[in-house]
Length: 202
Image: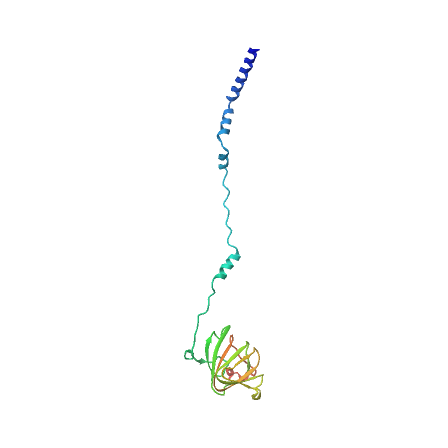
């Protein structure tokens, strides 16, 4: 029995030695042991970098709103600074005009002063835009309607103001040398009820 046991032990040891020395077995075991999990992770390609999204339209708009808006230059003008010239076409040739703001010949608000001698008449007419008239000096008689009517006129004295609505017929006559300030929206245009009253056609 002891001899049989020794024989079996010897056979088991020999079988194990053969298995370890078989081609590829030892190399596979060594390769398995020598490649740690960390090395396998390093062999994988890194993920692509995340693309940054551009600022949203709301942020751009908010930035634009924060920028201060450009403002018009401050302008101060005294009587001595006013330069008189010919009145706009369609007004009596005896009148003179001075532009305080804007350009009567272009779209947009404008302010002009009109100076006329005593007795200057502007026959019934209308404008395409509202007209604000302020008397700076002297006085003017104002009437409304398509026909001249002395009885229906009323005085507008120094410091007075009148609003002439667009396309509403009106007419005026100065009393003494008069200066009017007119505020309206350009381009300036005047249409006479009777074309014969238009100075441009005389």
